[in-house]
Image (cartoon, rainbow, N blue to C red; front, side, top):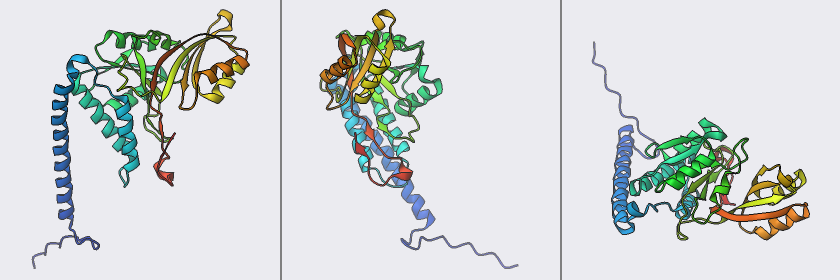
Length: 299
């Protein structure tokens, strides 16, 4: 019998590249990516010496992280899903922050254990330890007692959660420093809304485009809740006394606390107390990739 001839290598008609050529290109890129990660780690090592973050515990930079993520979304293109790229960068940021100053993430699973766990792993990876707490109050207590841990608490109203944010009112108490997900879209794989809480950050590190206020009010009604919802996002926990309520109000850029007060007064509500309890970057609104006709726009 005549010997069978080996099949000729498949060649891309447009570029003339063979399958072996393309695999070699992938191997080269993989090696370069790994080398760049090692190089990034070496720079972080030098950064530790400059900032001494292992001693201060102040490695979090929400403002810088927000700007990094905005640039990432704006320059992204091609077939690789944005979800993958976003998670890779989030895990890189969290892991290198952990290398600078080890920390834990304390989470309240009231918004759904699977959903909160998915969000924690999407944004912080598996290197950073994740610890479940009984409720949001326990999260705040754990963060306050730590050297530099983070907390995850619901950013929307969840039955039974209570007005946990009142524990953030003292100047030296933990504060809201971020809201997840930062890149917001309808098809986000980690879409449960969560606030990130940490010990107070320096002015150079904090992102305060959206200011978070704790308000104590009297005369709270469904009409007042409707009037407030037109202006901003908020969480309300009703109190029996004086038809009162404790509110967590998020003021987006352009909105002022005076506007909120005026709207509440017009709805028959009196404000008994107010305290700034943190802030976070404006979320980046991005259209789903399948239906996207233009690049994402900042909200």
